Length: 156
Image (cartoon, rainbow, N blue to C red; front, side):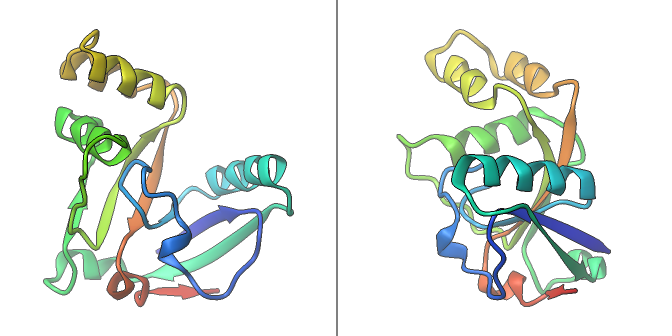
């Protein structure tokens, strides 16, 4: 399969420590199987941080997802488990770190931090959070969180 990474600076070596620790699936390297999503992200990043839009393309043998070589978590759709996982990873007040090599699942583009804050303060239940995160424009994300998982990505 082909995966894309949208960025504002081209690089040859993936450095997991350069990723934000409090993203949806934790600190890691994020890709998508939707090229237009990577393009939009690269434009957004270059506007915010300078540089220029870059789309990196990788191949990934998805048969590895069904082997015992890597620990994989997959969310096929927004569920309460997915919402709780995102909440734990994005929450700066708790010390949460999972041990998955790869996590695959949807991402809700708009208002994630706001909705997570409402859930944390108790004004949204986990079921309401899940419904609201299942927003009109869901995209796909692939998280590679370990050096072992990165070895399976081949840059084109």
